[in-house]
Length: 225
Image (cartoon, rainbow, N blue to C red):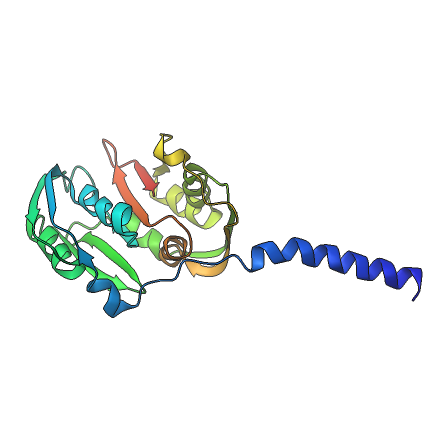
């Protein structure tokens, strides 16, 4: 074996060793549709929470993936929800929540519960979710703040926001500094923003995305997880 061949084999082995730890990282498996809607939800008492805060319970306690489009805070102001439910399943739980705030509806799509306003749906958010993203990647140890910030500053998203005269505003707080589990490897191409957000909450330990437009004149959009 020549010295050149030995060098080529050595280089290949090093590259393979670097690649393997990321290639075989186990990914979170999406619930099958029938299983997800029949998930048991224990007795629940909630006082004075908004609809997105109520659904936080499903991601925090049951790891159910949820994507939420909130209405503009001026057009669809926050409504306080009170719940006192016995043990039930996910479908009936969601229907109980919607009964308390019927301005919204929900649907299970691709293993993710999507929630959005029935009317007065924000046109900028709706159009953003259909924007095609060429590529997005992230590694374990990345903070949620960084992920949201990077997504909203993707060139495809940023250009659409400029046209709409809207700025992304990502808040830095305690929760946003939580980081992806070490060993996470996410690399996706050629998908819409909605598909990108859904795949993140299916394949990583992040289980929720929320988009909301707000401000005196609707001049800001926030993505949070």
